Length: 258
Ligand code: CO8
Image 1 (cartoon, rainbow, N blue to C red):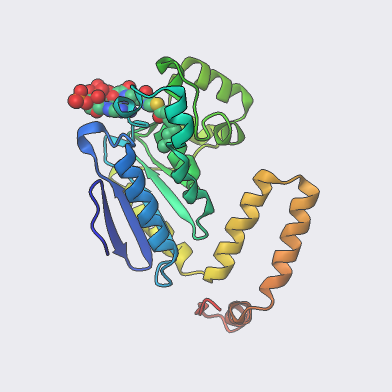
Image 2 (cartoon, rainbow, N blue to C red):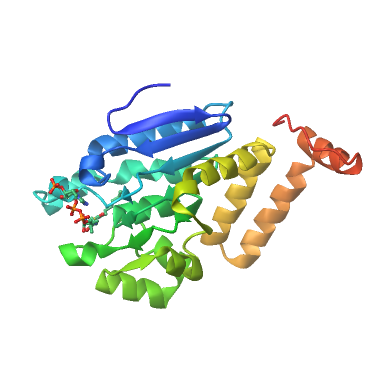
């Protein structure tokens, strides 16, 4: 594995673990951390021995947003021409599942990065928010879009217009996070969850991810048609034969990812 300046990268079984590591700035997402995370994600996505990924931060902060000091001097043309945050989009093109394991602050770009992952596991210490309005800007990487899909219009409006934070319990009630975990068990739980996913048929897990993402972008009738075609296609896999045979034999399936 490569070493990076602003993240730590580890392999835990079939799970690729990425830890944001700019403690002096509460993991604020500067250019270096973006280059590091997007590179590491692409490397894991292309690695057949990795079945799922976890992105996490520290106990105090998943990420306290884009780096405000880096953005502060920019003008309109600078930010428009550079599409400064565009490279983050690679996360949404990743085909293997990514879990965000969030403890502490996930604010602005930090909340948006967590939402770019496939689901969020939250420590009971997690705090989510889109405080961009307090800086005189709008959210720019999903804070008015993915956030609204996740929590609904009323909460998205209130949160983005006031910039207030929500705690883990509220985030779970609102549907922003999949589950809450005690803070000191967060990483173990996230890795175990990713390991469970990585033990499934890899092509099937990738198809499930693709189908659920289709639900966010397609009208229901098109989404249902897409899902049915994908479901039919799974019957071409050796893993479908193995999965159903294992059930009949009352044993655990041993998927070969083919
Ligand atoms: N950018 C740069 N530095 C930061 C950031 C940030 N977002 N957040 C914290 N830091 C730095 C602080 O400046 C401080 O540095 P120093 O010690 O050198 O003064 C250090 O981290 C510790 O922070 P605090 O002393 O403020 O810690 P507190 O525990 O008192 O407060 C808070 C924690 C409440 C999280 C506070 O730091 C805070 O409000 N941070 C800013 C949160 C914010 O506004 N985030 C939104 C940023 S805008 C944005 O994300 C636009 C998204 C565009 C798309 C991005 C895609 C990835």
